[in-house]
Length: 333
Ligand SMILES: [Zn+2]
Image (cartoon, helix red, strand yellow):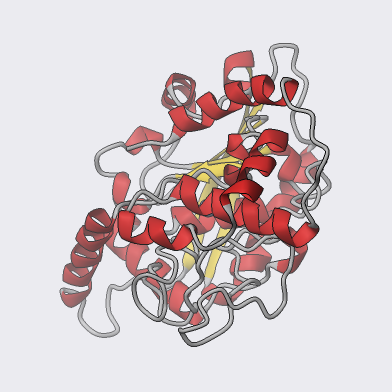
């Protein structure tokens, strides 16, 4: 089910392809963006009905040219969080609905709170590559600002620092399991955030609340250190990679989950984020990638792929979904 092998394989291929390739023609900015959107759409989609939507985004030739230049992992640039298959999403929806049905109105549905955060700094074996303590403080402030309207807040409960070359460049697999088994603290309602230099063009990935019960030690978010406020990963260096990954950890899907293929609101299980065919990059105001469905794309949403400076919103529907996910899978577990 996990896509990490694909990421690593693609990273390995990149060098080979780039060495053998000398391009004379180049894509326009719009063509390049469309090719990137299609690559991302295809990389994250495993349902045939949803995958069909990706093909209309950019011609094969443009995709081939972009791949030849930046490698097949280009589409995973922002986030490698797994897209759950439809059957799994429906199982989760049913579990949450059952849990919500058992909640008396106004009683035990958890709608706000302060979540303890354990930050695990991973440096290389020489102790280099970690963030400053000020960057961690600034990151916590960015998180709390982003989630303020939802009622959820985050409080730094502890920081560990580990020098380990394998974990420092880890983008999933055995190194992830080892790192998390060694470092994870707390229970289902504690957030563990690992900061490293994952490579492969990735900014981060997260686990969903529904996976805690079967894999409690794997629960958490992994974030590229350079994406912290003031880091070097511009235009993704204002701290919203952590916001995005914590959004997943709270139970949110990408706004482009399911493309235009499912309902008017897309496949993210949230009614007030209009459907979006593929991730948006940059800050394309007015983009409307599902023209036959209502609403322009939610490009300012934290769960899209736009630049940090472009994203500033969790919707009321996402807030409700986070509350229900937290109640079902995290509170008191
Ligand atoms: Zn994501």
